[in-house]
Amino acid sequence: MTLFIRKEAMLLKIIKVKGNTFCIETLMSYIPFYKLNDKEIIMLDTGWKKGEREGIEEVLEKNNFRIVAILNSHAHIDHIGNNSYFKNKYKCVIAMPAYEAHICSSIVNLKLYYSSQTLKQVEEHLGHMVCETDVMINVNQENIILCGVEFKIIHTPGHSPEHICIVTPDDVAYLGDALISYEVIEGAKMPYAYILSEDLKSKVKLQGIKHSKYIVAHKGIYNNITKLIEDNISFYKSRAEKVYEAIDGTITMEEIKKAVIKGFNIHVNDYYKYVTIERMLKSYVEYLYETDKLKLIMDNGFPKYTK
Image 1 (cartoon, helix red, strand yellow):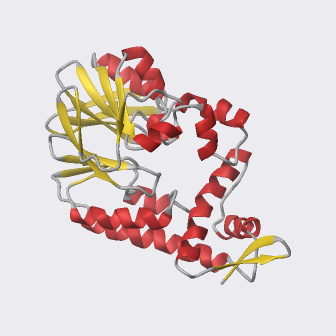
Image 2 (cartoon, one colour):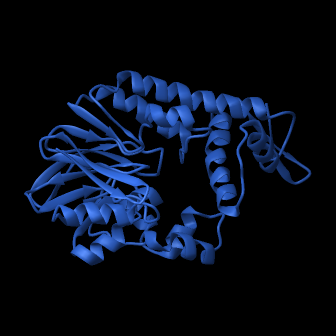
Image 3 (spheres, one colour):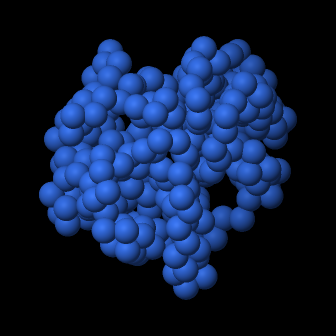
């Protein structure tokens, strides 16, 4: 089953992955859903608000789909951007990992996570992420039943504090952002991880799973992920090495940031791009410090890093 809907310059498509597991293809994401019947679906993540909501909503309406539950992999803006909107529209249940649920439970909690932004900035730019979670998944939970359907849970922290992968009854594993696709590897200058060391451990953990199909949020569907895992690990480590190479002498985090922005040829044209780069870079510098490639010293009251 493949359905095309043209929305301005965007072509949305529903792809059948296996059995009752499908995904909506947007320009930026594969957003999976599980069909309970011809009308009712469970969405695995809900995509961006900006740039995706209108197209996703049109796909749902044209197919007469009604969301009865949302199961989130993690609480990033491109994965829960439409949670609150769809919950209000369809009166559906939302389930996600407990810590992720706490992050998006209020503006103040979002501010804790996005600490470089003011409370006002968080409210203006991220306020739509706030949503009420009905079912929280704990760190030891291996499955969840929603609307009578059992989904298996694989805990893969690192990209976010409590990121999970979700396996549908069709033995399709939705990997969220635990892996990135080859399309992203080809274009990414610095892929994001909240804690890179934990993210790499989770990628290694995925080497031990075996399912019939795999969906990567940005943006691939695979029958086998053995090589993809290896290439992901190599790519993230190579980005860390490139950050390491950009560090010259004994310098502050701000100076590292300037060197990396220049060395990676990253165009920073607004404050929000700047703080995004800051959050991404921090994880790589912490990883280099944790693996003893960098030393942290105090110099005249300022923390500085050196090789």
